[in-house]
Length: 283
Figure: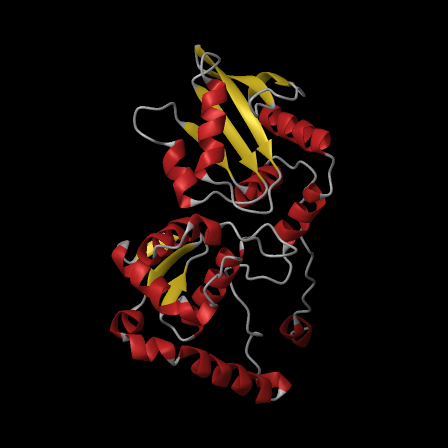
């Protein structure tokens, strides 16, 4: 049976409650993880992919839920991607939240009905909800790469990030280990094993456990790079007490690293020319 992902309107109240429970503010990942915990959403539901993007369907719908809550002023977000509940959001009841979709439709209609010179910014999300965006385009490009090419991309990324002696093993039956590198920090050096996963579904806890098992006797440091996301269970498993910690890089972080290191991604500044009419009037 196909896992049923809650609709965005079913996630409005859980999102608000999760934000309250987490202390009133949280970044995207923290908020998603808390909603999953609050609602007891299964790992199978967490892993359902959203077609045509590096998002899961749950993340996609939670992004819309945040957008709707923001549109009515229940939550706000900063330029650093941190969401916070507002005074209005604190006062909303579950019945109030249930009425938000209808309220947003009215807001959108009022914006469309305004004359062009009075229209506000077109309804959109600052949360990168869904239709496009450079990260989605980049992840689509990576998804079309051959497996060996993706491993070479990971190799280049690690080298640019300061790793030395980075090798891609390219061996089958190697316990899921795709390569190794050495991270030098001051006078110390650490061998790090890495694994590359071009998943459509989220990476679950079992994948992290399997990778850790393959690391035994070879290194205490591991890194998993994926084009998708990690489930909360996978994140917990990666930092489980008494076991070697494994660092995780998801699709969003991968895009940011490639952008920061200028690997196949460039930022172009658009020149804006402004005519100073007052200046000419003073001639």
